[in-house]
Image (cartoon, rainbow, N blue to C red; front, side):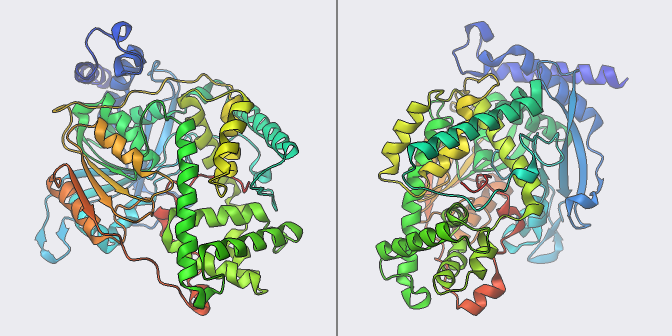
Length: 558
């Protein structure tokens, strides 16, 4: 009986999915359109989703290895490794959930109707979202948590979800390392050799399965997860990279969309995926690095790093040169310094911690810098896994330049005006030049008027990890979308953060479906306040669990 039910439901889902594809079938569809991507994968997704709807997820206590509280339930959903062969090899994705509270946080006597599941992806690629259900205890999320089951999951390749690995995690954190702003020819040759070796390692360890770790399959997995949760239509919150495959989902399965939030959107233009997006990101990080230095300069009375942004840069350069001669704690060199301060470009709540660490180091106390910048061996396996998935997805998703001369030309030019992040970004992505799996043609993301319910895009004007132009491009491509901009701000992943105006728009949309017209804006959230050194020591480098998993690129220190 189960088999009959699966195939009957698969037929219904297939008809729905085909209705969203261009008429005429794959052979006549424009390149990059849903119909050009293969009818076999479309059918396979329908079969897998129907099977998942029949079997559902058996939620229960989370394994101890997940390090989640007892309030969170865990389960798994089976998806095909290859959607063209839905009855072939299956992999399991881990899923976490906290049920909707059903209680109005302002009046516990008032019940709130349940609206289904809110699924979240924090980005990456390579980040896991298993901690997301815990966000419901925070004040900013309580209204949403009253109406929705909060659902997180680990995408394919991440954590316990058919984990991907490209090298021995025991050798992943190798420090101290260099971080030349204008690398020599010899240094470049060394990094090219490392990139080639890493690409070989990915191919050798993953074999034929490597090609199946990509954004299109992440979107298909999302539809199977939707079905396994018992939802006819998906309510989804994607942050950073999660906005990209969320947009793919909306293009492939428009009739399956209920509500979608795109938080810190990346540019979905096929020509940007992914080489040009990374060039744009490096340029944007230079601007955000300037914002950080200007903030430190305004608080020179606290940090003593200089009264101008230029003087703060000189303090940073002095620290980097000193670390090159004698690494702090024997582990923190210029590469680790750059990686630690890159996080300040993602989240401005890192600013006081990083400024204090730099100040203390230059005054003779390396402790805070070592604490914040060193790589911890116990985190090596998770970090190596995240980088492997990041590269597999981005390298598989689209063509990359295969001639090192192109990378060298483009980034040498860019580094003249954006030296802070440019070369570190190159070394992170360079294995894609030597990748040993087939490259896909990116899907042309778009939705015409009436094809989707209203969707909500949230973006900060000075976001470096997902430059603002990406949000504008996604807004242009999705008819009926609403764009809410946080002006003059640059933190990454802003949904449910410190900006009450943004959170008001988010709540209104998720709870009522209401969007603020085509465009709206919010004043920036307050800048962080400098902390006296003793308070910084007590605060340490702690961040909310989910924020730590958002779209920072997982890389060994360059």
